[in-house]
Amino acid sequence: MPGNSLAFCVLVGPDYAGKSSALSRLRRSDLPWRILSVDDDQLAPEHALLARLRRDVVREVAGRAGAWSPDFLATMLQTAAVHLRDRLAEQPATPTVVDSYYYKLLAKARLAGADGSALLGWWRTFPQPRRVLYLDVAPEVAWQRSGAGAALNRLEHYGELPNWDGFRRYQNDLAKTMHDEISHLPVTVVQQQDDPDLTAESIRKVLEDELG
Image 1 (cartoon, rainbow, N blue to C red):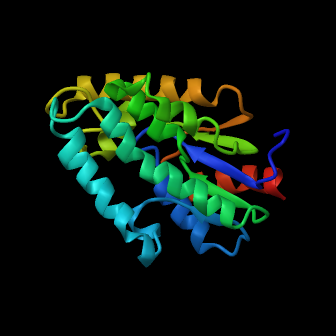
Image 2 (cartoon, rainbow, N blue to C red):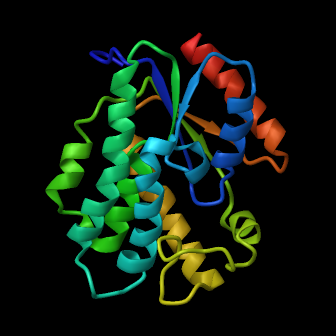
């Protein structure tokens, strides 16, 4: 991207698309890419606060309708977005793959009602990736992967309780919103595959071409 000196790509997709599984496989390989994520098992011990915050945001903020404003939710989600931005800046020349970056957080904040928050405009000024890899998944498959809703949290479906209709509508809206946020960037769609190893291999091939 013009004016972007950071050597990074972003992997994004709907909930239960398989990003974490694919990135775990890439991390275990001998490839020379740094992988950044706010998943619990990918955070350094000194950044464990983010894992605790994320659990509390889902349970205490998103899970209590009306108790907190959408702007407050966006403020809490911002901790993860800024963390990833800061980690990128530490090694700007190192080829890096970022899990979702701020795009998925921004989309979820928009769907929660924070569309007009100034915070979201600030996130959009963060350094932009060379390429976005969009890991696709059909809502029906994602629903199965969630244990028919058993594993869902409050930021993965519409309605107070998880059900297929609320999940399907939310995931379709999430996908549309994420596509809206990345529409100005080069995007490669990685089609849904049932084998995580095949998914990781498809991602690896795109990254090799892009990052060298």
